[in-house]
Image (cartoon, rainbow, N blue to C red):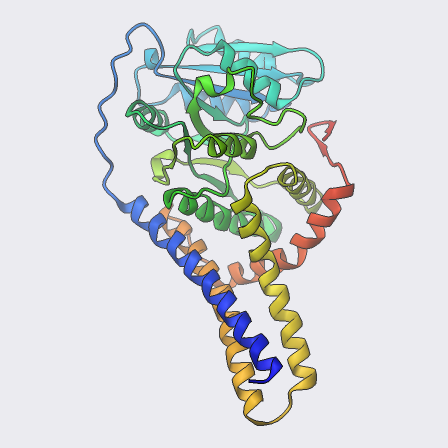
Length: 386
């Protein structure tokens, strides 16, 4: 066997393992979405909320009212839940709007932080004030369906769950930049849900996360990595994983929340730099392994393809080497497109295979650049340097 053929064979095996892993994630995701919902009996907890929704916010005056209206309109007895908005030093009308709504809704509570405390401190403060055994962490810019809280409450009350991961759908309504974000996030959503469903979670999203309240009340541990401005979701996942806690995922459409894609490439890069920065601090070995393998595979294929084109021109070696290489390229991209299409189908969204392939190529080029820049660049996030 020639050296180029050996390289092509190894790349093919790598791509095949990658494809089998993604296909497993896709299949368990689809199965979980279409599985009939279990009828979970609500535990009787008279006199206290079943679940506390904690919403750390900063400068969300355009989004806070729709969010709170969604939470007020839940198909659930309002005595069964409370909403705690923790205003993290907003400089706009966020706090005023929330307090105005709290005057007419006794289940809504407002906590105002002073100084430069940050989102993680806001989340902890909200959890300390919460009365429920379970907390649903939500961002200030998401939208909830009317059956979201009943489903979360039923799942958590069924017992045995420390951390419940749920889907976040990125809404795109303007141009390629937003559509690319939606497609990227659909792939990550499928990976997050699928990996948790097979018992080896690699990702979490803090915009839609439920957990036992006491996880944040143990002062001997720091489950949020509070030395880092961002990444409460991944630090929580790492902390619960490290103690072998029970982590489950619920990809059902009723468990989903929606958030608007950011506008413009500058905001896109700042957001990705923030996400990449937090990943350097989170210690989840399988997340690192999957991330590195996924990012290196297409680059390895590209380098090998270029090298084969320069050095292999005739004979059986040409046909065998290029056959394996072309198959490896297919095993890289087709399962990702299938996963994204499965996510779109699960939430009644239009599938876009060609756009997904374009976004995948774009992400493949940008991801290593962003990973390197994140080591040196600290972007602004809601007026603060992270």
